[in-house]
Image (cartoon, rainbow, N blue to C red):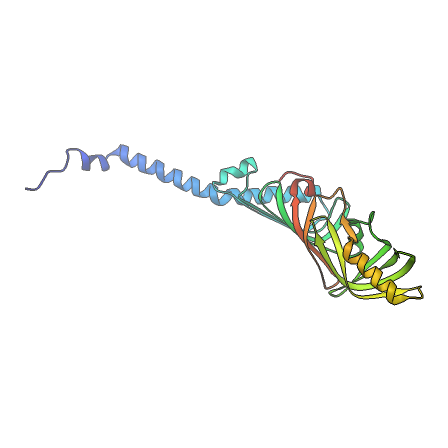
Length: 239
């Protein structure tokens, strides 16, 4: 036996009320999709404008924000944020380039490029074992020179090697080559200087900078540093 359809079911789906409901749902979906597409673009533009306003000399500024739902962006809540800026001065240090990323504001990561003249501005020399240290980068090699006091010796030192980040705030110099001048027993002095270098940091991140470094290398005459950062303190604005 064929059962009859419930009375009024077919007529309801053809009714004016149902068509209005479908139209309203379609509008809601279209508006929601438009917001999901447009909101990140608007947020990117606003954040970029804020950075350019705060740092007018900055170059090649780009911002990318993502959030779901996109409505979170109206409250400056991000699922991800990426800021890239060139030639920008933050806390007195001019970065050739810095890339900042975050999944939870203000905590983030950074990857930065420093020219040779800015290196001593980023690092503190207060507790360095080298007096008036001079640091230069030749392609991918790091050269450090200065005066080191070890035991009865106070010697002029020139050394080539690599920098190593330790404990987030200190940097050790790992010598590959080491020349000591001004002593009668250079071999003994070299051994003592090498021991001092391996046991003590040569630089420390400046106390007022909100950076924790985990990586540090030299590339093409520049210093590349990376690690974690407080974005709000680094940029001095709340994106």
